[in-house]
Length: 299
Image (cartoon, rainbow, N blue to C red):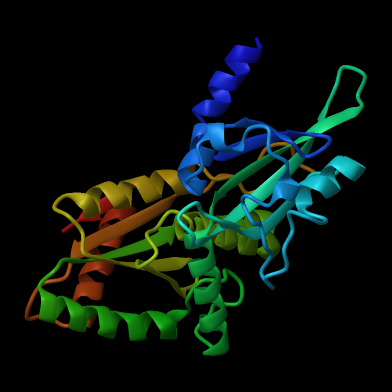
């Protein structure tokens, strides 16, 4: 059983390590090796106080020789999440998001701790982008993605890059299906929650240089630069399926609400304006609506 458990941990996409109550490392999985550069043979048996990973918080305060999230969790039994910066074997700092949990023996007594961590470069970039948009009044306050003004500016910028480089630029226009029915049946607070869930699903499913914003109402526009041949179809349908698989949780209900989106997707063409590309995506969107919704029309 123990070996099966280790095999599962070794094949996780997240990095995992386990310590005993003395904060001595007793397990280190393969993903931890990848993210830190340290092989398990280099860390097993060492204590956190030896500061091999050199964890610091956002202010640069060292954590390994004092109160780190893992030691706090082993003290009070409460799981924690935090953003920290670890020291890679090659010398550079790497941001990681950590989640800590206590390990308990058969009697329920805490016997150690487990820390799961993952690369946070994309998360930090996204967080900084949100802060910048907010400072420039380009953020939609409800969904926390770009607003229409932001999209209009990005359309002009991405279109200029497209005309200079010749690299592809995809336009994807999404509209939430039967959104009026959601508002009429559940109320506007639930409608707002639907908008936020759809926005979050899209936001966390894109590359860092893709552009996402709320065009207005229940419409979302995505600008997807530098796509390989056939990628627009693949990305568009994947995003549609991701939205359909998302849950909107309702008060006093065990069953979550599910919504779908219809979309129009097209590639920018040399010699046309951004407005014309957007109009074509909009026309294709309404073809999807006429075709029964929850689908993408390409053109």
